[in-house]
Image (cartoon, rainbow, N blue to C red; front, side, top):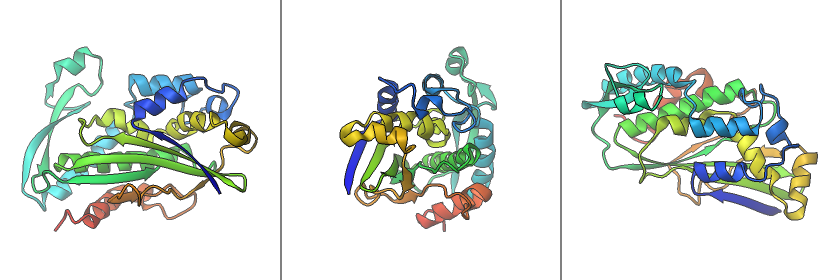
Length: 273
């Protein structure tokens, strides 16, 4: 089995590559708006990723409020500020910059996990039968998990991977570091990479369409974009948490019971008594 790997050290690196010499007659550009999370073409997806995507911030904040209340009951907590569309005072820098999350709010956060590093890998692949709506809901839940871990004082290293089988004898992997623990966590920018269907169905499709070895681009054009298979880098990267891809018709508690799923994941890391 021939394995082809496109690896990126950051989301911005993947974004730039996806936007260079795009195959405008391929699915990354011609896929329907419904299939690709409301984006009409590749250029629109790139612009949204560049300018900022904030549509789901309210859903994220509501979920975080519930989680904070539950975790606050089990830890010694302190108040910590964060940016939101609602809050008690204005962050003038963000307000003048036109950011919708220009208000400053406060949340109670745990103080018992300072200094820990958690390495996560997200399989952001999905087969064509998976709805953009389910991909979005799952992504918001995972974004909430990442944000919650960060507010608990845990440094986050986040990788994204999607691997497909192409034909009978080849696989193609896209691997990207979505967040480096040495950098500040910008949850609004990260939410696009984690939650927006265009991350897979426009940006990553564009990456796959550039693969030219052994007729790769031709295969992607004639055979769709391959069949999603389990990711391969979790063990090599020594990840603490593996976030498996969404399964069409499966028992996806991450969508139907998001708060419970997040609490179970945190318990699995040994962070709750």
